[in-house]
Length: 185
Picture 1 (tube, rainbow, N blue to C red):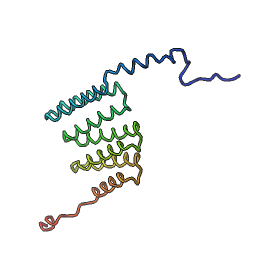
Picture 2 (cartoon, helix red, strand yellow):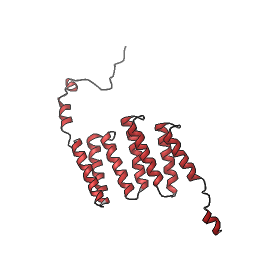
Picture 3 (tube, rainbow, N blue to C red):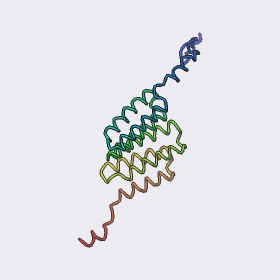
Picture 4 (tube, rainbow, N blue to C red):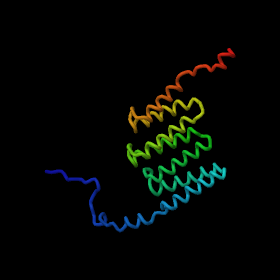
């Protein structure tokens, strides 16, 4: 007696082949790319006006809307999350900004692939933000996280990974005293 064959999609009915619903779903998007751009411009205007908390709130709402509309793994979602990272950095929360940037880099890899130039640029933005962080205990941990993600994406011998590794090593080494510190001793 042969076993029944179970297809992963279940039983295919005529409704499965009906593409008319797909056409309406695509055109019924409430957050068209033009609307997304306009809302991002609004976020930028509010931020440039010095109202950073309001800009961050607008960006958070936009992130919610874009994620609901397009899903987690979509280029529009990535772009909004990079904006959230940038706003966090402008608000002097570099750790949160870097967390958003690293999240966006990982999403970009999923959406665009590891060899895409935008992925490399996103990794460089994360590295630049990390380098600009003030010295604090979290800097080493975040640098290690950046190194791990960059290595996974670009490979251990890539230029960006070598630069991150060198910078991490230089931060781990005790700094040599300056001439002024030697003279005062």
